[in-house]
Length: 128
Image 1: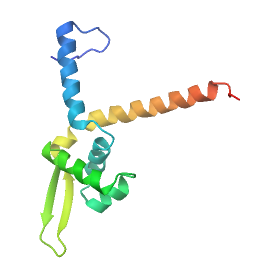
Image 2 (image 1 turned 30 degrees about the horizontal axis):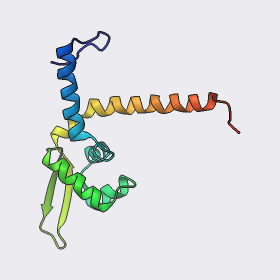
Image 3 (image 1 turned 135 degrees about the horizontal axis):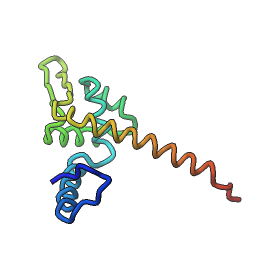
Image 4 (image 1 turned 180 degrees about the vertical axis):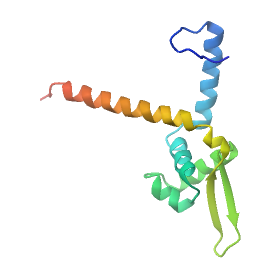
């Protein structure tokens, strides 16, 4: 079951089912880097160093692990080309593109939240 109308309170069964779905999604997409990596690759296929340059702050070790996990969950496709040296290109899959609405909503929410916190901080008296 899915919650279709967020204005009504879901019953116990619907809530438990929805909670399970959210936990599944967070298990696959959770963490600091996965959604930014997907967003980067949805824009265009990239080499490892291009991804690392675009997604600021991620270490090579973590990037390699996250790309491997995203590949296992079919969000990323890894293409290896027999050049000298070997060329590896990472590309978002169609499965990644199913997150388009989720990413848009998350971006909008993030922007609203940032503005709310800024406004809240401006209205607080300075502490001495």
